[in-house]
Amino acid sequence: MSEGDATRSSAAVSRRRLLGGMASALGTAGLAGCSGENPDERATASDAATGATTETTTRWTTTERAENRDARVGMVYALGGLGDNSFNDMAHAGAKKARERFGISFENAEPTSAEQIPKLQREFASATDPPKDLVCGIGFAQAAGVVSNATEYPDQKFLLVDGVATDESGALLPNVANYTFAEHQGSFQVGLLAGLVTQREFGAGAGQTTGDRTVGFVGGVDVPLIHKFEAGYRAGVARAGDDVEVTSAYAGSFADPDAGERLASEMYADGADVVYHAAGGSGIGVFRAAQKAGRFAIGVDNDQSRSVPEYSDVILASMVKHVDKAVFRSIASLVDRKFRFRVGTVNTLGLLEGGVRAVYGTDLGSAIPDDVTAKLDASRRAIIKNEIEVPTTLS
Image: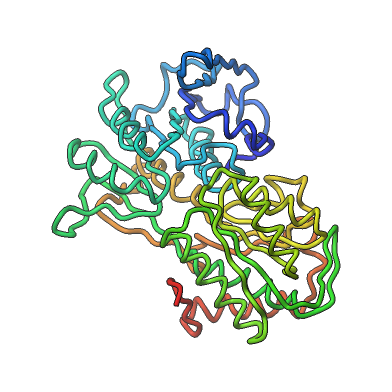
């Protein structure tokens, strides 16, 4: 989730799905601005009447002849694409950081359907001019494709985020580095925050509690990974008080802000003070609903009070999931010979490892009472010490 892409509108997200441009840089010579983006960007769109996929090409002013030969990367993003200000943009930020640090090149592919995912992975894995040193599958829907392609291309290194690639016997594939996250732990933290806030009279920014002791959860797609977010959130709310009600609903997509807004609006109308979303681009609609209702929301994956600052007056916090670290660390291990690319392993990042964390909103964080933040600090330490066991599934 890059800050450079954070201002893209949800309309642009729905129009743009396949980004075929190569981003290459040498050190810092050709980088412009704090995000590392170069202003020389040219977009070409196919005639909509032909049904062809819209393609955006990004041109870089620096030469490619000195690019790092051990770090040509293909990025296949989750459904919903770049510009979600959330999960995909966070992965993109990791690749951009690696480009700035090591002078690597990378190409982005944004599938519009699950069927496209293995095909895009295969295109990167079979590339020869130049070949890819690493193919990154971002998101749980990438797992089956990574298994198939990693088996077909045993000499190609893969990164799988939010999944574990195994063969038919259950053994880890030797050419895949698997990264999973303890989303339930971070979700517990923001659930505790929501549960504590809804029990008191609290106003900040554009939001105000109602006294109904109700909070909500909006998921993207109804799958076990998103259940993990909800399970942790519910456990955190319960820790705050037994009499706090939690309502939940799923948008059916990670790229439908209107559905997110509709579901959250219903929750706010029923008395919810805070709604936490794990819905990717659909979560933008949750923020819209919060502003309209004068309530609060909690973001996900990125610090969304920064990535979508137009909603920072209602974003209490975000459950940041550092997909950027998984991408950056994997690329760095290809470049820096001090590190070994950890293929055939499962790397789990939780609160202890800094893979997930609750981050207070830039505008509202200072208004959160000290006794509330103290309880979040205490619970974080207790989870790390295994004194609080956070569920991963819904009961």
